[in-house]
Amino acid sequence: MMTSNGGRMAAVLVAALTLVSACSGGGDGAEEPASTTTTTTIVMPTTARLPTTTTVEAYNGPLGPLTGVPIAADRVDSPALVMKIGNNDAKSRPQTGLLEADLVYEELVEGLKTRFFTVFNTQVPDVIGPIRSGRSSDIDLLAGLSKPMFGYSGANTTVLNELRRARDAGVMVDVGALRLENAYFRSTDRDIPDNLYVSPAKIPETSAGVPEPLFTYGELPGSMGSEVGGVDVEYPTKFGRRSTHVWDPASAGWVRMQDGTLQTSVVNGTEVEVAPANVVVVEINYGTSAADAVSPQAKTFGEGPVKVFTRGRMIEGTWSRSADSPRWTLTDSSGGDIPLAPGATWVLLAAGPHSQFATAKVSVIDVESARKLLTEARKSATP
Image 1 (cartoon, rainbow, N blue to C red):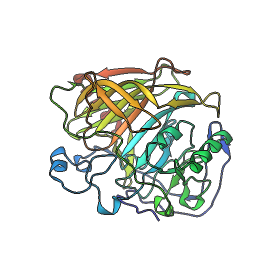
Image 2: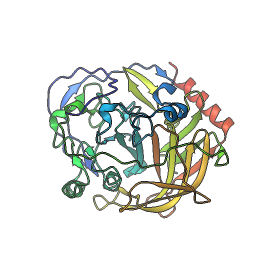
Image 3: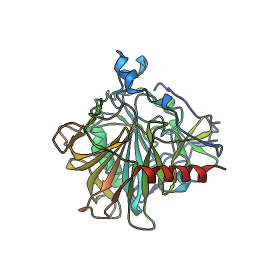
Image 4: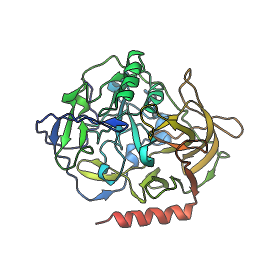
């Protein structure tokens, strides 16, 4: 059974297994109802979640491969657990488990909405969700995690066949709702499909592998990059998605806003701001998934422009990644590695100019504008 560390959420489980059929581009599995009621209080993140650089440098023990921060002894040989978390609209929010994630990919899905490919390794919360369906884009991202466990609600027939082939090829271990019904449950305070959650402790032991580092962590040379306030990734349609991260020195993180409002995650029944240590905006191209003519497929092998946001600074450069070496290589204009700050990383897979659906507008936010955005967002979130 998976070890559950950093459990955050109280939930009352009530039986009643229900599987729902696949939807366009994916599908959602189900199990028992549970209460996921939260308060409306939103609190700021705390730097206690992410060890400082000084702490890490003085530490001689093992470091998390996906964060570069100290990892508990009982997590050293643990595999990565990937969960697809819903982010379609306000009905998906607040999510549970985003704060405990080592790594989050934000990928484009149909309707110019986005979904979270969420990776846990350093710690695994008691409850994660809402869990949504898999996509063709997931397979190449799974390839970089040394045979992780992959959890999702379901998928359409074509994606299920793609995932089955990936499983049989040893790319991942399938721990989705269609295979492990007892690990998933339905919340009673939300509607389908935004109410499916998973209890990682109910996932049995598997043959999953231990992940290798995907990024370089370390000190940022003083000459590398420039001070900025944040970044905004927007799709130019009223039905699209706007993802914003602004630097907050108090939490040493990039506070996230979703469509203009604070992105939060449930911790002990309270909503807490999401503020990762690093945000990496990679410009990729999206093709059309064979599974669905309206479903984008992320092309994450290749190379392209990147903007790395770390420690209140932005470094522009190039990303590269291949099937043979699926870690992300991030280099600046001189060809030097761009080191990330120890801590959680969010990778925004922004649609480049040759994508078949839309091109993301990526805007850098200056320091003063970022401060105003954050202040207004926090005021709006206060009851």
